[in-house]
Image (cartoon, rainbow, N blue to C red):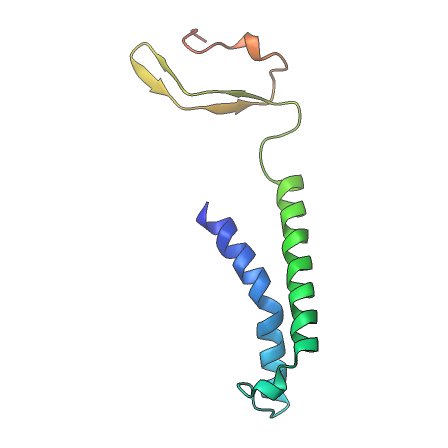
Length: 102
């Protein structure tokens, strides 16, 4: 769970880092407040938010369980804890019930 959070923070900070590198490469004072006018900051925030929204869409679209899969929750079977799993072959959640032998 920490990896997606770090990814989003990195994507948000990326435009600011690129602008700071641009300022450094152009021999401008990176820490000078005059080099960071509100108009530039507003554009950097807009670009950062667009990157974050795009990554959220990509995460929602391409991560997780396959389409039409069924989640079988964790259960105790013959005294052993069986972890939850996603079964792509099942279309009816009633086909595999917790505690049923396979």
